Structure formats: structure tokens, C-alpha cells
Image 1 (cartoon, rainbow, N blue to C red):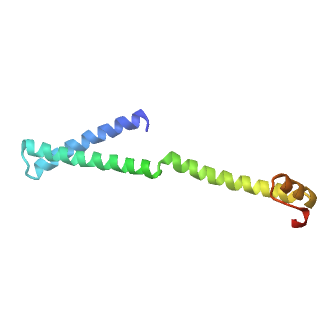
Image 2: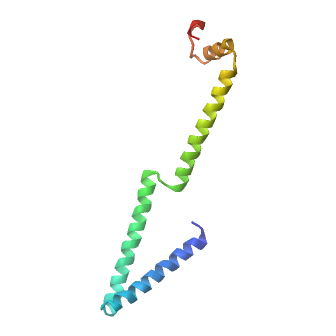
Image 3: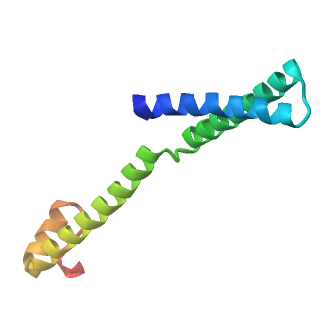
Length: 111
């Protein structure tokens, strides 16, 4: 969140508080009662917002983490495809030698 967005969010909270105060006064609450009711609504909103943020942190559903996970999946898929193509382009003897070097092949009869 940029500074400008944070400032706009703060102004929005003030606006919601003011509108809530006037709304509660229009609903018949008087003076302090309207202020306390508006403040209680704001506290519930802030606690709900904070709770949802903490839930996203704990579950790992943050925007950056989601982007990183998607990028990593795409990267792994692309890398696997390229490596498979390169392996398929090798001759059977070269494939067997590579697999032996990697410890994946015991003798040449397996290929």
C-alpha cells in the first residue's frame, strides 16, 4: 500500500465515522450515544479488517505469495518441458550415459 493509498484509507475511515455519527443522530441517538455507536461500528470494521489480514498472513494467501507461487509453477513447468526436449534430442547412447552419471540407470539393458 502506497502512502497516498494509506492517506485515502485514513480519510475514508474519518468519513465513515462522520457519516455514522450523523446516521445515528438521524436514527434518534443523542449526542454521546451517537458518537459511541459510530465509534463502536468503526472499531468492529477495523477489527474485522485486521482479522482478515492476519488470516491471509497465516494461510499464506497474500498477493505477493500468490504471485510468487504462480510464477514458480510456470517456471518449473517451462523448465521441465525444455529439459525433456533436450533429453529427447540426445541419442540413446547419450541418454544412457547421462542416466548412468545421474545414478538413474544401473546397466545399458534398462534403456
